Length: 197
Image (cartoon, rainbow, N blue to C red; front, side, top):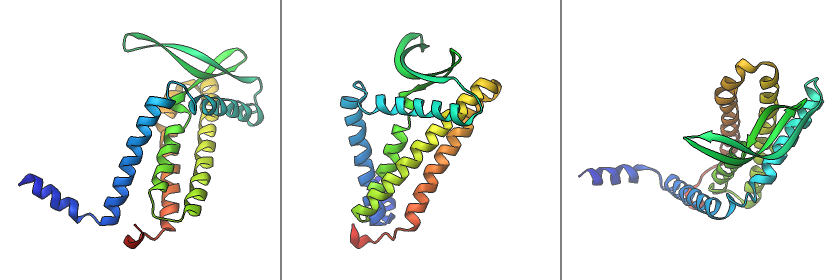
């Protein structure tokens, strides 16, 4: 009885939406499998992206913060998590030989870029429009992430008590808001027609 109710509820969802969600689900599962099996350990995408975010954040800090001598280095960082010592590659930002920020692979924006691009890819629009929207969005997401790391570096160096709150709440809210705004901009200009699916 309960299964029939769930099926009836599912069938109430428009076919175009079910198709979109199915494509999105397959895409997410495929990405996770490819990433975990082939890309994560080799850092094929993560290494250059993490380094790029770090060096770009250093450029912004040196150019626009009114301060100088920020530098970035790719290193292996040792942390103690859940009772175990873990070694992970990071891009380290220093200021006058003092650690300011570590940018780990999880903070380079790759996952957000994949989610954003996957959402656009699943929409029933022309290939040219998808390509333009994905490229435009990836550039914006990369830029906002670089700006986030730059400002976090500045806060860590000069307004240290506000760093954790800014890192865990304010900037996450800003980055996710930008992604949602990009999706809204894209979908407002898209008419979903069930016949195109």
